Length: 318
Image 1 (cartoon, rainbow, N blue to C red):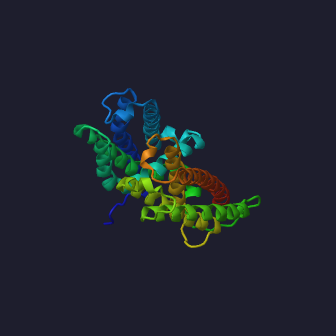
Image 2: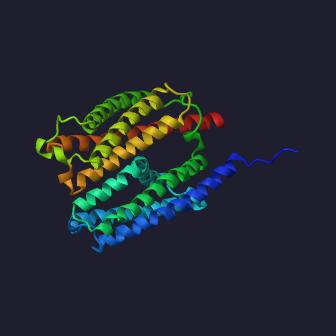
């Protein structure tokens, strides 16, 4: 007697549903913490009572609420009827923020607790970082998996299959390739600078701020550099259609890298804790603005690639 196996589509649907609910549950403690801080309650440090910090906490509370709605959209039928742009932009930012943080969470959690204590936080409230990291880790695992099931169900032509395909008239291949070369060069330059700083390089670092290069700063700087380089390689692969047979791995690298460069650097541009940034002001401004611009340009190239790819593969399937 043959064993009954569950169809892949059914397994993917179950994973999508479980992970969607899991992401919504995981992000709830983070949302509650940010709401409490927005109203100035139970703040770990006095600095977080400043209007700028409370505005950031309010913004991140809104982002967490959007994350819950998206998680529900990924696991419910009504989510497939939402406008694509309404789904793609927050998910692009969210995965860019969460996936790199997830990889660093086991080290960044204790580092954040140490930083809070050094800033004058009471011992008890320093441990709020544990709850934040648990929420971020949970949503960082569940949300991308739920997204994978959602994207496979809604845009199967654009998300799977081989990296190469036959173009249709009106394609943007040449624009993709020329733009990708320019953006990839910028990403590699930014990545090398970030890795150089994380490894201890002092060119561009204020000598008076050398002692501020703590573990938190080094890890985030290294993460930015590594993802910038990974994004550059992935971008060249999906536009030149060489270097790999499958489309999804380089696409994932570009998606996360572009979202990370945009969202992390956007937050860095508006956050008030600039005393923890040991770079010279000009160096920090240039690398931060470059990250934002490169992230946006990578996102635009992704749209061109997916548009052409979906048209071509849908034509083949028809």
